[in-house]
Image (cartoon, rainbow, N blue to C red; front, side, top):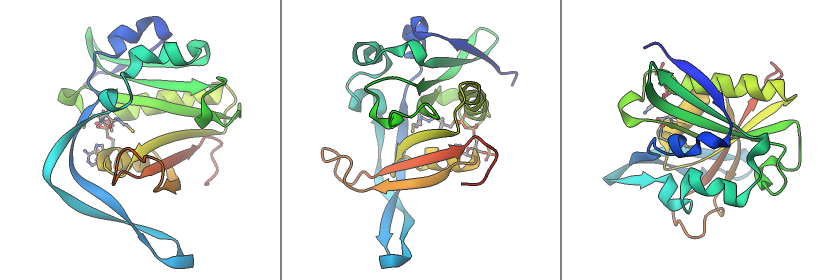
Length: 194
Ligand SMILES: CC(C)(COP(=O)(O)OP(=O)(O)OC[C@H]1O[C@@H](n2cnc3c(N)ncnc32)[C@H](O)[C@@H]1OP(=O)(O)O)[C@@H](O)C(=O)NCCC(=O)NCCS
C-alpha cells in the first residue's frame, strides 16, 4: 500500500477522531513478581474476549483534548492512501499540565496512535511511529514516551517492534479499571540503547 503521512495542527481533530480507537481484548499480560529479580510479564488468554474503546474510557477522546490542554505544541499526523484516511497519531510536547511530559522539553509523548481496523497490520502504524520520532527529534527530544496497558498486547508488541523498551510497570495506576496495569514504553531518539 502506498502510504502518505501529513502533519496537521489541531484544526483537523474532527477528521482525526473518525478513526475508531477500538480493539479486541482476547489476551492480556499479568505481572509475576520475582522479588529483587524484578517482574515477569506472562501472557494469558481472555475468554470471553471483549471490545475496548479507548475514546469511551478516556472521557471522550480527541474532541475533548483542546478543552483540557493547549495543543499548540502538539502535532497530529494523518496517514492516507490517496483520499482514504488510514489512521493517525498525536504527539505532545512542551505543554504545561500534561503530567506525562514531566516538565521536560527533551521528552515527547506519543499521546495517541490509531489505525482503522481495516488497515491494521499493513505497516501504517510503523510509518506513523517513524514520522512521530522524526518530528520529536526535530524538537530536540531525546526520548519518546508511550503509555499503554496490559490488556493491549498488540500495542505492546507494536511498540517493542518499533525499538521501544518497557521503562515502568504501574499496577496501581487505574483504580477504576480492576486488572488493568499501566505499561510505560520509551524510545531512545539519540541512537543509543536505553
Ligand atoms: C497498535 C496499532 C497502532 C498498530 O498499528 P499497525 O498499523 O496495525 O501496525 P504495523 O502494521 O505497522 O505493525 C508493525 C509491527 O507491530 C507488531 N504488531 C502490530 N500489530 C500486531 C498484532 N495485532 N499482533 C502482534 N503483533 C503486532 C508486529 O511486530 C508488526 O510487524 P510485522 O508486521 O512485521 O509482524 C494498531 O493495531 C491500532 O490502531 N490499534 C488500536 C488502537 C490502539 O490500541 N492504539 C495504541 C494505544 S496505546
